[in-house]
Image (cartoon, rainbow, N blue to C red; front, side, top):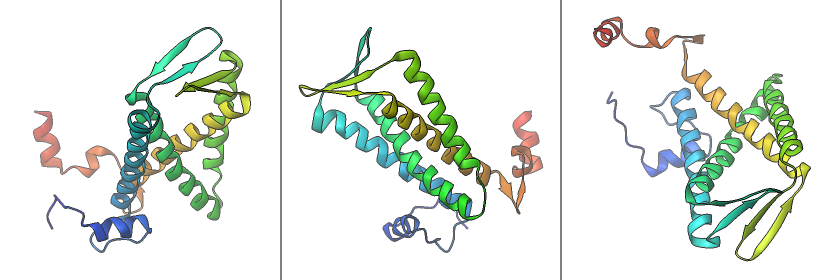
Length: 182
C-alpha cells in the first residue's frame, strides 16, 4: 500500500456523506473530515474578508481593531471545526457520553466571562454596525468549545491502535524511534 494517497473526487464525496472509502481507516477519515471542515471554514472567512465585505472592525467600549483576512480565516476555521465538533457531540450523545456537552458548556461559560470583562462588542463592516450583547458572546464561546471538542476527539481517535490508547513511541517502529533519537 502506498503511503502517499491522493483522494479522488468520489472519495471526498464518500467522506462528506460519512461513508468510509475502502482503503482508509476511521481515524484517517476523521482527520480528513476535520481538514475539510476547517479548510472550508477558513476559505469562507477569507472570502468574506476580501470579496464580499472588505474592511471589518471589531469595536468595544474602549478600542477598535481592524480585522484583516487572517483573523477572519481563523474564525471561519473555528466555525468549521465546531460543525465537526457538533457532529461528534451528537454521536457521543447516542452512545450515552456527555463529555461533548461539558466542552460546549465550558465554552459558553468562557464566553460569559469574556462578555462580563469586555462588555458590549460591535462589528463595523461596509458602513453597517452590528452590536452584540452577552447572549451572542456566550454563543460564540460555545462554538469555540465545540471546535475544541472536535479537535480533541479526532486526536483521541488518531492515537488509538487496536482499540487501545497508544503513545507516539508505540506507533513508530522501535528501530526508527532509536534512529530519530541518535
